[in-house]
Image 1 (spheres, rainbow, N blue to C red):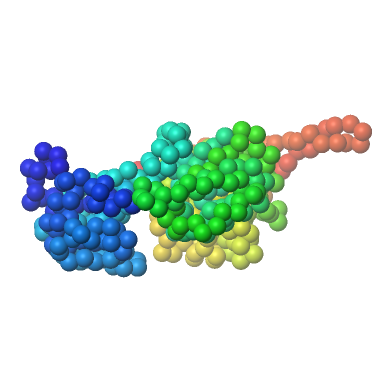
Image 2: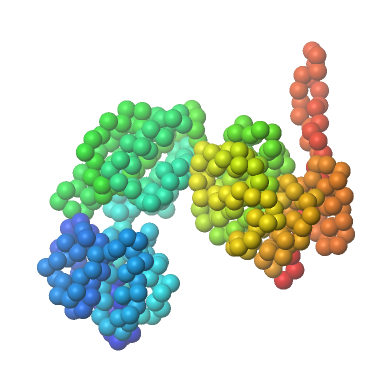
Length: 412
């Protein structure tokens, strides 16, 4: 225990202790003393079994959901309590949730190496060069955004079926040559490390407590993700209601995404803008509003296929569908700006300092944008794109419909 922690025993009443598969053998003397001296110990059933010889107080296995135990923890504020967690409680662990309920000055954390650290040590991988992903309670498609050439990925599995399901996903995307290493029960007597390619994955009897290591080759024939904005239009299933590649790239630039921000995509269509917003950073959030159920379903399929399963879709007509939604940091209106009340409701919901971007193709909507630009300022841009295509035996330019693009920031 650090000198600082020793000086503050009354304040740091909540101890978060990481425990590995080696149980009490791997715990420090300080961690052992905290568990033995606690009047209340909370953890997973596995954690409680690993530490059972030290527990003297009341033990509680996490309920489902685990938030059900939080009132019991907080009600004992100031008395010695221990929460057991796997590895590092603040790395995809319960530490984040508890720190939202209890001041960090009241918490003493004694971490162990995380599953990521143990896996990297077994493989000789540098963590700073590795994508770290949790598939625990998350859609498997979360992994897709990390599938780049030469990528190294460590992923926490949901269960023993996760490795096989992931192997099928990789093979279906044309990345069957990817190498999968399954690291089971790391740090304990049951530890096992096995490897297979995605295309030939046949590992059986996989322990539910496993971490996956995925290594992609430098030459990937298909299925690799891109870091660029303005993904090719062919990446999206569409009925034609799609913000085209070049316009989309400018639109994302004007939306100026920052980590953790929330986007409203009004007139979601195929979902291309909202999906690319989400792909900018793992912390991004987006809500898409689409009045047609078939288009909403199509946008959901696109989000899964491109690795943005967190896209939340509201089926309904704007502005009525805005009711009760969290205020956004940015809004894109790809359709419906000419409808009564859409701009007013969106502008009212937008956070101060937030950005609103709208595109218009029709003369009617362009007139609306001209009026809004006159009233609110911002940047008004005319975007015109032409693509080379055959004209008889020759090549010529085929212009797309011009787009009027308006971007404005709401005053603070």
